Amino acid sequence: MSYLAALGLKKEPFSTSPDPTFFYRSPIHRTALARLEISIRLKRGLNIVLGDIGTGKTTLARTLLRNFHEDSDFEFYLIFDPSFQTEFQFLSMLVDLFKIRPLRQNTLHFKRAVENFLYEKNMIEGKTIVLVIDEGQKLSTQLLEVLRVFLNYETNDRKLLQVILFSQLEIVPKLISLPNFYDRITSKHVLRPLELEEAKEIIQYRLIQAGWPEGKMLFTPEAIEKIWKFSNGFLRKMTQLCHQCLLKTAMNERFQVDETLVEEVVNEEGTFLNVERHYSGREVTQAY
Image (cartoon, rainbow, N blue to C red):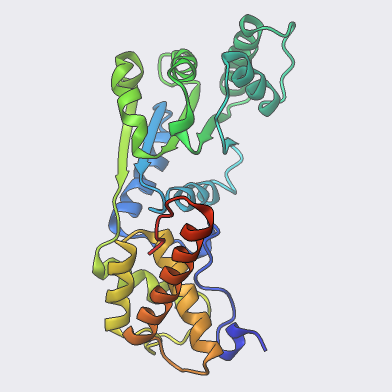
């Protein structure tokens, strides 16, 4: 019998995979999602979502894509790891992503091919092209400048390319150093860690989505507060800790997650990290 069945759950409620089904619309995530959708539909151009690791950027991106899933007027293209070393590599990836064939394999013809592609898609086919880039902090200033050039492609009433950058906060100095790029940002969003009340709501929401009876308590309020404190309000850390707590609850044939169980899980994690530090000879950051 799986631990899910033992707890009366139908699905894994605390997976760290970016499943839009479990996306809880906290006020800050809901606002960011709504503004991004408006910006895309109005064809405003450049949008940036900033947040530390584990604040829900990737899940927000997947939810945005799902919101447009049935709208054939919008075409989304995703870059998950933009750690390109040269302008040529970046442009080569773009022409492959857009499935276009430049006349020659050089940066000049790549840019012309992308420009023609964007014009034809927008003005002839009536499509809106959206480029979503995750891990935006990996973009060099040179590649941000390439994006700026593409954002210059426009008509009287629209940008021909919509760009959404999801990035850690370390990109900010790069943006400030490129005023011509920074000035083109039409919407900026910063995803902060969750407040305690938001943590309570998201834990209960995920449990209900996984089949837990609404109104029934699996995590005590004290347990949730400890989880929130240990995770510092970061969503990914919080879901990892919740998963370990559920696993321990099922294995020990308990029926509720209380603060004592949370402390046991955190102590076990601390013991593992101490062993890893000893054998690896390097500093390891505690997950919770």
